[in-house]
Length: 259
Ligand SMILES: [Zn+2]
Image (cartoon, rainbow, N blue to C red):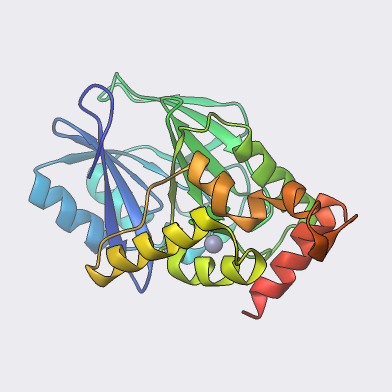
């Protein structure tokens, strides 16, 4: 559980094989990001004695949206979803949000949430930036990695990751999947001599041995170890010498697809 300012806390709810549904709670009030499985969320709400006051959806994939309708029907709470007409959102009574929108919750007055548009994994992908401290990055950025390009182009995804990289280094990042260990194994093929990455590999192995989440992560750690945020520095290294950073990104994403 991640302690934050005031009394806001953020808890990872494991679901499916490797998803995290992120529960944000303060007192008896809670929000959930990407509730792919309603039962997992209901169980956590009951265990904590929380009521659900809002649902935030980063993108249309079923493992992020599948539980939203059942939760909304039970709790009559607002849903905030990307502004497109994908079938995943159609039955929801959702507020459509986009880049630059600010979301507030009357039950959670200490909380402010800014919407970022980060296309690449899907074209509608959003991230939610909470209290200028916590970024819910969905499937754009993972621990030591990034999402696959299902709908967007490499330049779109690269720009989205650069957007995240421009946030303060102490930003805590909450990806929607536990992919860190496999991503680190790939990152070590790119930068085997990176000592921060080597240390992260050891820390990650220890956490996973004890079934602990490796997330949230910090932007500072990602900048030091995530190859998809390191394309500028990689472009100075012998393996990619004289490449453009975007070409390094495109090459790494292609290699990671088959790793
Ligand atoms: Zn996805």
